[in-house]
Length: 183
Image (cartoon, rainbow, N blue to C red):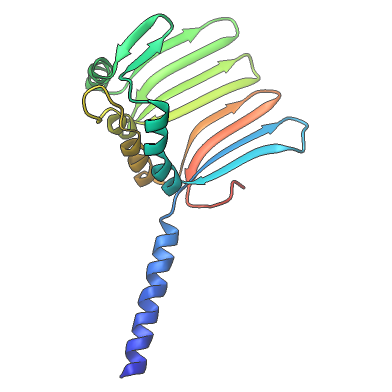
C-alpha cells in the first residue's frame, strides 16, 4: 500500500511539474543585421516581467496619466474613450496612407489591432496587438495604465508574433511562446 501511494504521489508531482513548465511563457526579441554573424537575442520569462513591472512603474513614474503625441497630451481616460469608440465600429480600416513608395495601414481585424507598413520593396513592418491586451492596459484606475493586466492577458493568449520589421539590413522580431530559446 505504501509503494502504491508513493508511486501515485510521484506521478502527481511529475505531472504538476510538466504542466507548470508547459505553461511558462517567454517574451523573445531577436535583432539580426544582414551580413553579420552577431545578433541580439533576448529571452525573458513572462513571470519575470510580471515581477519587475511594479518596480519599473514605481521607479520610472509610468503612472503619470498622460501620453504625449508631439505637442498634444492625452489622458488615460481620454484614451479609454477613444478606444471604446474605435472598437464600437467593428472590423474596419482606421487609416491608410498610400504614396509612391510607402503604404501604411492601421486596422481592426478580428481580435487584433494591426499596423502594417511597407516602404518601397525592402522595408516591411507588422505590429499585432490583441484587443484584449489593450483593454487590459486601459483597465487601470483613474489616470493609470495597468501594464501587469496587459501582460497577464498576453500570456493567456498563447504563442504569437507581436512585431516583425524587415528591411534590406535588419530583421527584428518580437514574439511570445513557451520556448526558453529564440531559435
